[in-house]
Each structure stands twice: as structure tokens, then as C-alpha cells.
Image 1 (tube, rainbow, N blue to C red):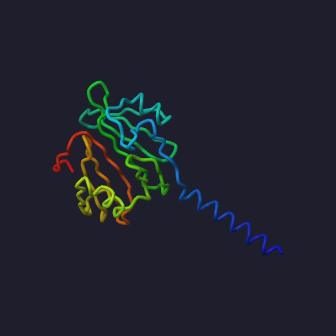
Image 2 (cartoon, rainbow, N blue to C red):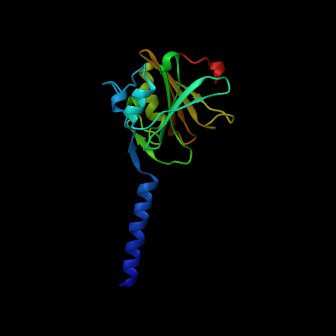
Image 3 (cartoon, rainbow, N blue to C red):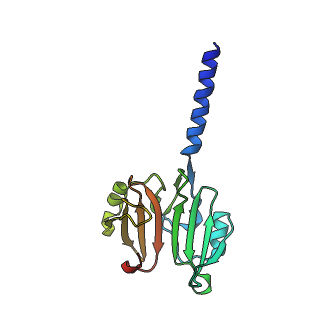
Length: 180
């Protein structure tokens, strides 16, 4: 009888641990997305903070370029450069490397750590999506980058070597390939 109780306790404990290790969370971006689940540009740091219910962290790089970031309770991290009058026309969505959480509710209905490269290729093929293999010197060695233009926005999806979405970058301007 005591062995059955012990087995039950261990089973419940492992189930709880697995739920927290691979829990699914929602990004909380609803007010920042339009009816087609696309991110609305331009934005301001105040609108972002209000929508995400977190404060804006302002910082500068070595070239005195201004940036802002938001770390959400879901584990999603958003980063952006700041234009004239702190206007935001680009956004990067990431999850810290040490977090295995799945975050849903991203632009285009994507989910971090869940959406695959194959799903994305099929979903965005009508926009002329281009796939590029990432090399050893990149953030996701052995992974892939999927890029496409939809409307006025350029989108870059980055996948790890297991073909899971790890990063999403949106901008209103084409990125010079030499910058990568």
C-alpha cells in the first residue's frame, strides 16, 4: 500500500514538473496586432509598455543608437531601435536561450518554440518566402532563416537546428544583406 502511494506522489510530481518545463503562454500582443494578426507599425514605447503590462528599458549601443526592450511575464523579449521622436518601425521577438517555454499569440499566428520551418514555408509561400541555411558563426548554427514581404512589412523568421521558431523580426524597411 505504501509503495502505491509513493508511486502516485512521484507520478504527480513529474507531471507538474513537465507542465512547468514546457508550459504554453500567450504573448499578450492582442492590442498591438490588427485583425489579420499582423503587428501594427508605427508604435511608441508608451503604447508597447501599456499593451505588454511591463516597463520599457531604454539603452544605447556603442554607436549611441537608441533602443528599447520589454521583458514580458510569458518569457517573450521584445527589442526595437528607436527612430525620430522614439517612433518604432521594427520589432524583434525572442525568448532567452535558457527558457523552453512555448509562447503563442505572436504575429501571423506563430508560436515561439512550437512553429516549425516546414509549417512556415507552407504558410508564407504565397508571399515568395525565401529560406537560407544559417552557418556556424550565426546565433542559430545549423538553423534556417525564412524571409518574406507581406504588404509594407518585411518579416524574418529564425529557426534552430531542430527547425523550431526561435526569433521573429519585423520591419518596414528592407535589411541590407551585408548587415547580417
